[in-house]
Image (cartoon, rainbow, N blue to C red; front, side, top):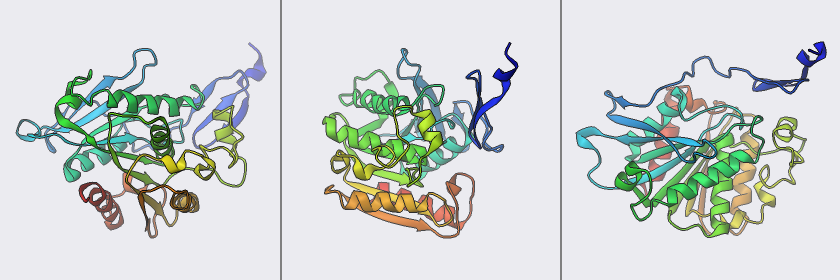
Length: 306
């Protein structure tokens, strides 16, 4: 074996490093985030189930339904979640995603599904984007109540759909909503979108994104990094958008620019920008303080108020 093959060629802390022989080693981002199996949580009454959306790609998802008193007696709005993690980490099957979505299911009275898109760089971008859009199309296939997943057929009202994503997941959520509008996707009525602490590009080359997405310049001429140059931005298929930023988040200004671009694009919906003071990136996934409660309440109200 070539001794040089074990040398590090690229180091993208805190996410991953790449060796000269092509091997990728992922760093552990947060010690407090642990895998969590699906099942019934007796404290909340929420039952989760893991399902495969595509046997060909292996893309899967976790569904969250509150089964108190036997389950919902009517169909509930569906919350579609795209997790964060820099496109290369994160999961629907961990304590961070499950804690957040269990709260939303309980307080907003929704059914939730979190998509396990394939991660970069092992699966180069734009695979995560394509997986996420295909997942939306798969969900839309349940609109007549005869799709492959019984819980969606029985419990989810696909005329009342909300998309939520944090960080990279917010970036994916915007892409999915714009593409759905451009494609004229039927079968889901997307009422609103929660764009939480979104990752978008800046003025400098994003070397990690460029590495993960070989077709990207890594600059703001890439519509995925800069929705302002996306011709499909005005076609974003939802009635309202809540953009959430945090004062001490290094991505704060990019979230504000996204909000401004959306509002100035000719998109016909209603957008709102909210900022959490003295907080950092995705703080609500790790903190249970007053500001986290305020943000969760804002998101719940966004879903439950017409």
